[in-house]
Image 1 (cartoon, helix red, strand yellow):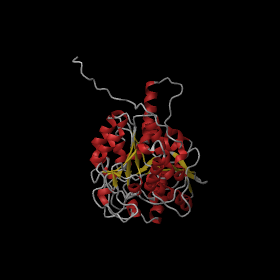
Image 2: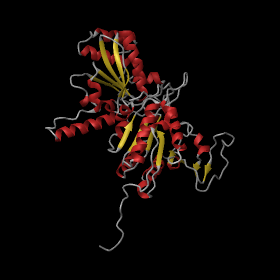
Image 3: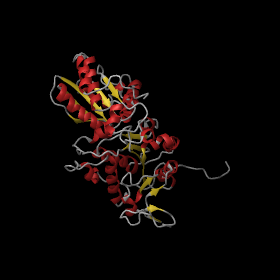
Image 4: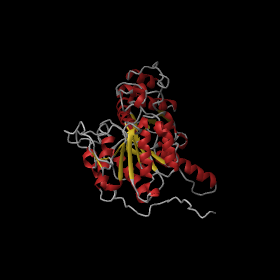
Amino acid sequence: ALGGYLPRRRAKADESLPVPGLEIFKPVLEPTAEGREISTTQAFVRILNQILRDKQLGPRVVPILADESRTFGMEGLFRQIGIYAPEGQKYEPVDRDQVMYYRETENGQLLQEGINEAGAFSSWIAASTSYSTNNRIMIPFFIYYSMFGFQRVGDLAWAAGDMQARGFLLGGTAGRTTLNGEGLQHQDGHSHIMSGLIPNCVSYDPTFAHELAVIVHDGLKRMVENQENVYYYITVMNENYAHPGIKEGDEEGIIRGIYRLQEGGEGKQRVQLLGSGTILREVIEAQKLLEQDWGVAADVWSATSFTELRREGLDCERHNLLHPEDPNPRVPYVTQQLEGSAGPIVASTDYVKSYAEQIRQFIPKGREYRVLGTDGYGRSDFRYKLREHFEVDRHFVVLAALRSLADEGSIPLSKVSEAIKKYGINPDKANPQYA
């Protein structure tokens, strides 16, 4: 009415950036060498380095750290791309004699924000909305201790969704039991519940390097190449172990939230074991114990995202509700995957039980579904003791599977009692939810 400027939001940048094929991450898609063990955090650093080497995408990458560069194995970036400091380095760093010393420079690319998650997240928001505010697509990666993310700056995470941010959040040292020895301060068992509340936050809890590579590549395609208004939250761990490498055809399941990692052998009884993050490795060990000790065959499924499975399942339910006479009603992806299997289903994760409970309504009809999780406060101890305390380790996975088989009448309850005795489980131990 007064002839002034009418603000208008830019929905998409004018430029376009093609993303290379998945083969760009070949070094982390292959199995780790014999005797070689790495963490998913190390795998992420390798992935980040591959992106930085790309001539088109590399200059758009904005690595952001609030603290702990060396903890995450990212000190190599100090020399490679430098720490952004508009006035350059004004002091002699104490680690100057090291190869990867703390190098600040006017044209640095890494944002080192100090112990200030709110400030670092604000920088991430600035970079993740640059496509709109500056007509310039940027690719921010903010990695932090997962306990210090959504719990500390949840309001900013919600605002980022509202602002249609596009970028990657990496929750490091994630899970209730992966960062042993640091108790309540660092042990996150609920960030995936919090991230799931943000409609356009796509969340994953991968176990292996190849899963992480597929997920990051999918995020690049969606956010950079297709300019889709989502952002990614991915949890990574500091626990070292061997990685099996990708099998052809697993990519879709990794992205959609679940795929069969290992088929079990032959057995009179059969169960389905689901796991994610670091606890998937306990599930794999439980598969061996079930077959060796009890003659029960078990298939192992990697559930990379219970959150995405739930969302897709709800989409199917909504469609079927609004299209009651559709001759081809939609079937949730997780239902499709598990329908062809047999036996009770047991899920175990390093997060509270609510995380894996999200898919209960999509479990095939008539099937037992039992969930193990880390409800309760963290505590300082060895990893194996923490997993025993929270009742998510291999022995409790076996116990849950046997109890489920007993409940459906396939084996006697005495077998469950036998397992409790065999594995030295104290039936009168404190409930971890309240301990």
